[in-house]
Length: 197
Image (cartoon, rainbow, N blue to C red):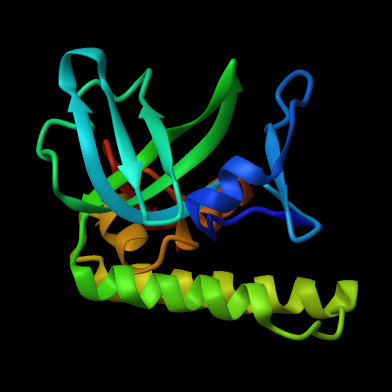
């Protein structure tokens, strides 16, 4: 099963899982719980920030991993050592395992505790019934409709900031990309999206 959204995981899972490098435009991925995970969602503390090198180290209590950005030159601009952050990132491997952050924002200790419980429950949960293809398609269809309605409700006429939508739910990022490809939404300006009516 391929996981398109950012999967909530621990750093230990990222470091201990198998890494698969794909050819061409296909996304590289980790294999976690028999799922192909190309994007992860982690909450942890920054224990080392090297802004001049555009990198930092993240510790979530289960392990430490390097965060390194190549395109977003100011992603570490507003954070410092000791900050608790939520990171949406793509796993990469070159000599050692690291993460390329797409979103990095400060959060609170409450969310760290909640995340630990989420990961703990997921790793000990009993197997669930496998969804049929039709059920999955219907689920995705419903999610897209909810997101379209949310964008409409927030739009004051000039569109809605993409980051505001992703901050509400990290899973929205993948849905936004799909809706853009399908022509259901468009970008009226930098960082903004709008429903095509």
